[in-house]
Image 1 (cartoon, rainbow, N blue to C red):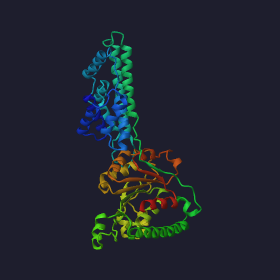
Image 2 (cartoon, rainbow, N blue to C red):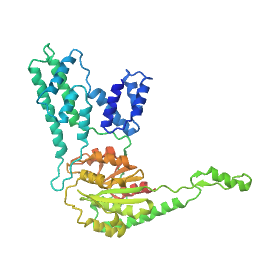
Image 3 (tube, rainbow, N blue to C red):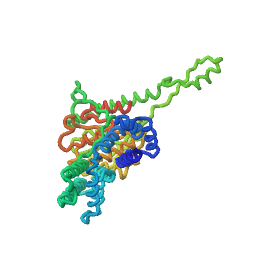
Image 4 (tube, rainbow, N blue to C red):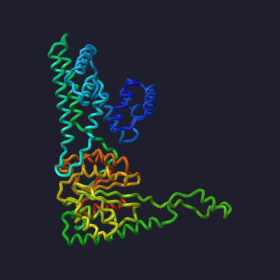
Length: 457
């Protein structure tokens, strides 16, 4: 039992689920208190030690089903000697290459799936090399194609060994052939079906119904120059309103938890009667903001107004850092801090370093942020991403967004498109939302105002 448990722990670590040695030992001790032959009790005892959060639970459930049901096969005892001879013949074959993937495939056929699982996980999470001119996601696709070809090669070698008549002489050739075919089909499914985590903590904000104010309900992309000027006036009034609310919240006294120690000290002046009640008046904690804004096409209109609001309310946050991107990531924090908001927006829009004619590439943006700006994220940081998630069928690099989630307080994705378009065409929102804390529509001023009020207040 301990050998199976340590093997499963190794499988969890291969999929980036942190499992320590002490947790494996605790799980082994807990299994002594339950019936390990009961599948439900066994799973609950192990999950109590291996899964440390709701997010880890969904990953644990996937790995548990994969390890105990997806990649392991109960082999008939009568077939075990013949299956063992075929796998040994594969290992001793001169045609067997030194490729780790092919070696892992043979181990997988021999009921040792750890090496193959590790290789497949590395394949699903591989990063594409940065490409400046001709971009594609052929790196990952070609690697998957290579695995498929190796599976077919191994299958051909097994069938050749069975056709030679040296194995399966006792009428078991059909059963052995079926066994290896089933195993290779499972290996093929693991290589082609990329797992997606179930995000239980995702807060999907429903799209609000249009109100009575036509300008506030009008999509940012449809605003005329005159309406943009009117929108700026509305945003200025909104900023003043929010600043007043925040200042009143800081100024209000006697709000909060009673400070027992200070109240008792004050009561000594009045013979123990607590006439002056003291409160723990701690100011609200200010979070830092990191904003990634897609500035391609119609998305830029929404990014412009969001950046205007964020920088107009800078005193409400501990820190605001902003990045804009189309294909390459460009930081514009100093630009907004040194110039007037409107001048900074126009300068950022005309910046030569931003190639707005390039195809949008979210994967390249996340990869560049990981390599250059990952230290900007901490447990007090709220990461805001404004974009439609359309990456022109390039590698979305969603696993990098998962790494960003592990480092920050929360990730909020604002999409300027309606919900019914999130799964159409080249949209990768379905891949990204598994790593976000909140995904919401933000296509007009009402949506943006509602979001900013929740963020500030």
